[in-house]
Length: 358
Image 1 (cartoon, helix red, strand yellow):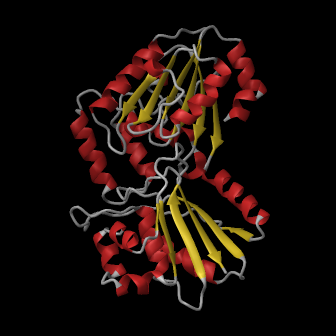
Image 2 (tube, helix red, strand yellow; image 1 turned 60 degrees about the horizontal axis):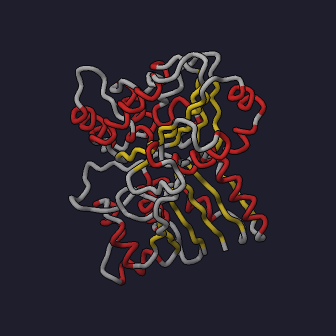
Image 3 (cartoon, helix red, strand yellow; image 1 turned 90 degrees about the vertical axis):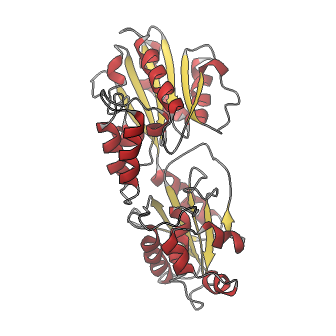
């Protein structure tokens, strides 16, 4: 982020502008905005849309709006309309620095004409319950929106510099947060400043530093969470002792048969699916966690698992296969004291899984 702001191209664009405004939306909005304001100055006109519950410490109070995630609400509608007014207040000689991260789709919601927010929510919720990937969800959000897919950007004549923290496959900036400011004009700048892959590469460097051999899984984790966990466990079992398999991406969970009131998330399901594949003669310990610190409705970032997870769960009277079938995995990992709880991390680049072969 700081490196992108210091790049010659971005510095020239900002220096040659009239007014410079700052717009940030997403789970990483607060942290990205703090870095940007250190460059622009605290008096820069700004609109910063954060998930409710995130800290706005150090940010200009009047510039901050809180909205809902993972589903939009009335606050998201107010934030979306405020964003349109903000963009319209800048002219052709001005520049708006736009900082986007995952979660922006829910935080900014202005339904297309003829559609209510409740109707939009029902259609997106229906698709999400089928286990659809993030790309499909964002395409539907764009279709139903008056501001996504570059439409917010097209409400202003100002030049746009969009810096993106990516949580989507292929790191396509137009898909992150449904791309409200990626409008395809030549004088605009669009840069991806961080991604799931860059996080894995940093983890690999740290693994080498502490004497482990990192192995980056070539496949982005995707598809049904428990099935992805089983595949990763089988892969880790083939590694030599002292290796750590590093994988990232974003799986899905089909909630068609979910138990009402059940709590869990894709990382918890991945960890439990992997645990079903880990045998005692394969000493593997894993952590599956969401980079944003919140896995589904579990209240945790993720969970730890190893070869003892399944027998320990059964010893307490819980059957892992049944927990997966009900999509109610938090209770199992909480009973085993194997939840990984961080609270909101202020970033969002998808999920990570680390499998250590000892």
